[in-house]
Image (tube, rainbow, N blue to C red; front, side, top):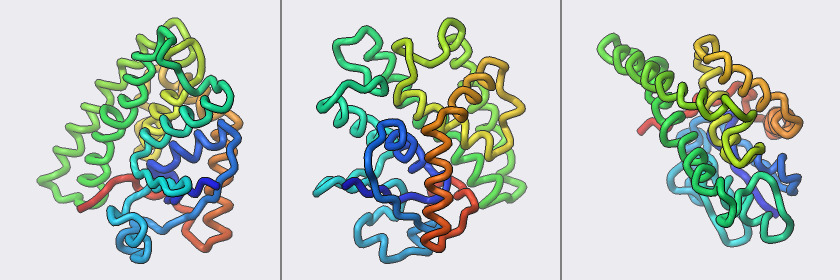
Length: 225
């Protein structure tokens, strides 16, 4: 049985969404944010104190995009899944690029916006938050070209790359940046968050938080030192 350690709407939402898309059984363990401060015993299994942490037998993984790639590759060994793009497919390289673009290019600058606008809102740092907001929005425009001819980013279908990028859009919505999306990106985000698996993941995290006595308020997804 797969176990996913998760904070509400944090980066760990990516693998939660993939698990729902794949229909795999899992146990969801909710943590207060930040777990390194509020759930000190968690450090015994994840010294980083961050989420996600995925446990699959003896395996431990802590990077959200790597977990998504692992889950779809693992599933593809048993039965084909459209979320995976095989190395033999023409879209494989594009898939890998978008998969990591979602975290490295789109989520990273937003964590700086969160840190310097909400955690350390000193006047001298607001300029940093503003700069990285513009940085994020400028790179978000890359999606327009990819979405001009197809509803999803690559391989002619919804894949784990859309989950990776979709989480970055979810985080942007929490930062009230959704009104600044282009029409194409706004429509894309609507397609993503309307998916049944996305809605199931949202419900699963909320219900697990209630059942486990953890706050249902979305965790600000950044990793303060």
